[in-house]
Length: 534
Ligand code: ASP
Image (cartoon, rainbow, N blue to C red; front, side):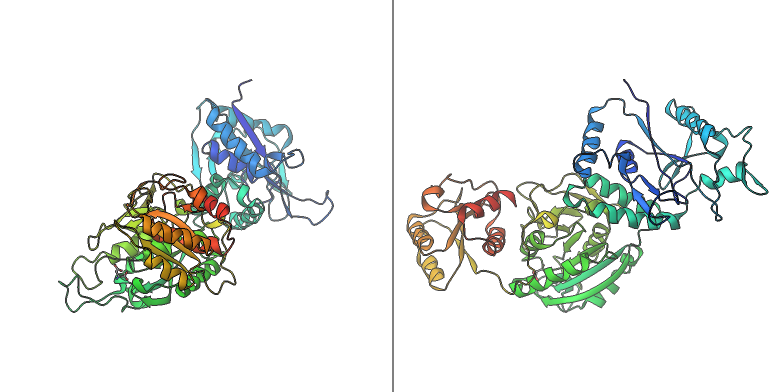
């Protein structure tokens, strides 16, 4: 049977208006998911406690509610004429606990409005929570109801119950967050998006962004403004960096911390662990909206991918830097920092893994590569493409990274003091095994071989790698090509030699993943699986 409207309802003393309409199907699923009633004296337990009962289905739903919402979302895609979704609340109270709406048979007046909305007969007001009736569109003719002694129901009362009180919604938002947190990874991301949109529309989203500075050219200075090559990276401190782009303070409350002050060629495991720990503790703070990390460009892709695997949060974490020192004509650092703050404050960037923005482009940590030694558009995702752009102060996404990352990653650096030793060996015609032998001697736990083509290995180097594997070193075949897949048992019989293929990860990112993999296991089968998943 075709349905025209679905009406959810709850008993809310102050927050929900008499009736409101969801903006679209996804928003409607959100409206259903946050359905709630406040307990009354008729129930056992405390009065006024919010009880969430999504779609009034909690007692009947035999499986995870998160999956149930996903089912609604999926159904929405299949239904041609989606029913309109409404929420009603007959139970708004005045400050003395009197019901403001007469209820019972008078509720038909609201169903009448709903019907007229469905056939497009009446307009509505776009409020932060959804579409609310223009008071004159509700027929109150003939209602004879006394709200409290001396106060008759009239259009003023109607107006009152059609408003929303941001203060009540603020605490409701907190309670929704609390409720949603129970569903963990089963919560559809659409629900988090809708919640963020609600906060944004309520003007509650006081964005707090923390900038963690690590050095690099963005903090670099030269003797003159025409000097873009000879300069000293990592000289400008975080406070001066923030002061140099005052526009970011219009986007969010900004605070900064100096985590390191290095040229990123000197980025090491200790700084990585310190940085990751700091990001994890900051993102766990409910007041923090997102994190920006300023970084040298040379090793930015490695730090980004490392964080992508060990940060345990859906909040935006964005790396940026500069190709030209801060003193140069047309230095790119300021606009890159500005864009990074936009991205870190954007609800769209949530759950998308660690991101890099350079030159108005958004990249995933997994795909991004520095591809030029000096141009300002050095950062590309050459193999699989960038995620989107930053244009007109807005982050615009066109795709997302589907490999496991951040909140969905198994890696954990809590209590990790050091990382396994993994080195990279470059492949070339006539490559010898001597570097490989030296690495085994020096106690390497893993070797990434940046092979030619599809991870092919010159025979002498291959002998060295076979012996390295026999000595317990884990060997991963990547490629120096920079594009495409190094596939298992492709150019080399990985099954026989017990090697691992890197899929599309370049050698430097393969190193990051292997280091973390080795904190979990030495089993090559499991590690190969990780290379296919992350
Ligand atoms: N050498 C610098 C660094 O990586 C380059 C840059 O930041 O662009 O720290």
